[in-house]
Length: 207
Image 1 (cartoon, helix red, strand yellow):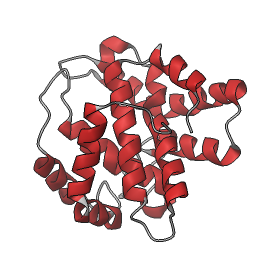
Image 2 (cartoon, rainbow, N blue to C red; image 1 turned 60 degrees about the horizontal axis):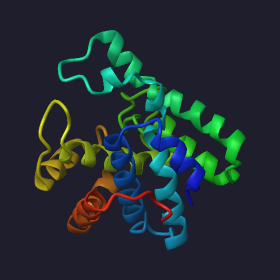
Image 3 (cartoon, one colour; image 1 turned 30 degrees about the vertical axis):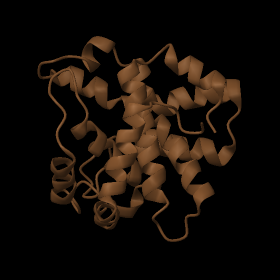
Image 4 (cartoon, rainbow, N blue to C red; image 1 turned 90 degrees about the vertical axis):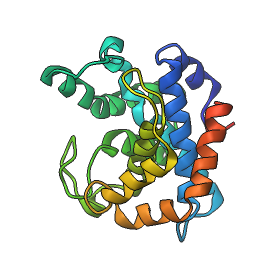
């Protein structure tokens, strides 16, 4: 469960849009994880709560870059990519104040550090591929992309659920774990509902 102290700290450092995205991704990861063999409800909830922190490293990325409407420069893109590594740093710093359980800290760190790795090895920051990428990061990658596509951004409108699913299917086995994409699509209606509920009533996982 995410502590009230952590919630208050993040509320002062990240925008409502960023916090809303993190919340929705956490809920979708919990929903998707619960569909996997060998993962019970308690474990799925822990995975979802840990996935909430996937973008916490954006604390160290200037807001003007995150909200930029035009194309990012090469230097700006590189700085945004650093949010994965920054996420590990933020979680380490938080742990000094709130003392996460070791398993929870490891999961949250995996989500933050590896959620932009790709199934084909073309991701960042380390170029991991396939099942070298931790399970939680593979789950987070799918849910992160779905929410990014369907959400309104400063530079574009959000797309429909069907368009997001088509994008996930297109990049299954390239960017995403194909087995996890199949499970997401199989339960697409439920994923859509959970994302809509989180968008209508934003709250942090653990509540």
